[in-house]
Length: 417
Image (cartoon, rainbow, N blue to C red; front, side, top):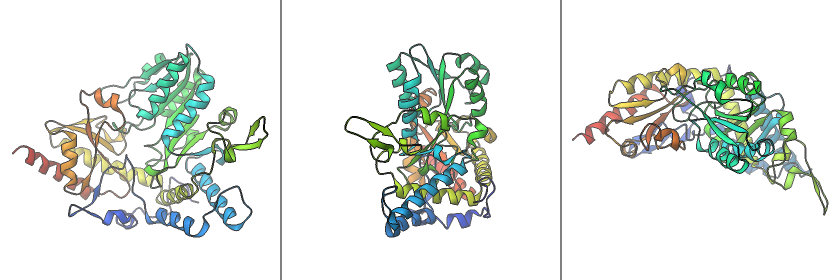
């Protein structure tokens, strides 16, 4: 398999778009313009075919049979794990744990490592821009343990103030849990520097990479993360499957999250012992088909090259930011310099409610996100209850940005009558 940073395929947006059947749809008589990729991405034929092939040709349970179908299913399931490990430069495939999504991965760490290591008087550090899935588990744990939940502040531009991290992350900090890229602000956080600070006081760092792994090269060893989580459906893969990566020694020492099935090594009527990694954390029949399809999604992105994916999105974001700011009627949340953000732009219109914008744009075939984006405290910190958001991926084009901006202007005209 090629280096995930430098692909073996020419990055041709027209050719890429031809791989996605849903992009041929008409919405309300208009060509679909899909700009809600931070919520979920569309699926190429290659991923869809892998799902069909599994159910038509290989459907069997894994690790539990000596017949041909079970062996083929097991091989495909474990090969996908190996592909994911290589994609994020994990030292060992056994460090890749299949979960249902990023949320379950985060909760798994909170319920196992943190449950065992956080005590009364300790503190847990997160940022003020976290997704609910990286806030609520820590609120619950802090309340249960008598620990303090601390927030790393960000400035008006949405950038973490590293100088303040020294005062927030201290010798009572047990875990720092941060998003790599904000799903609202688009901010790319300095994870490696935060990891350095966390490790200097004996803490571990957990990275929510749901918005970064699909869009840019991510190397868990270069970041020096201890845990990292992401979801397949945000990177061309199916829904219902995610990844928890962790350093081997940490995972080895953690208790199981759930019980039953392959996570068991031996059971008597009195007791049980646990299987080796990664199976200790994969109770019951796993999501075999979607794991294999995640491997197909990794193949697709690897062929494109993650540096090429990232460059394409930066160019689109730069272009879109310029067009949106030229309107003068919207306020963009987060850094306005595209070099400091990913392909996510959240904004607030001066006079039109985000839900009205979203509904009006849908009538023109343009799909955007509106609401609090599962980051209610962050959005409310801007004195609003909702924001509109556009987010880009490999199949989006500048002409689609133009269609969005034109649709926004048309909506403004309608509401100003």
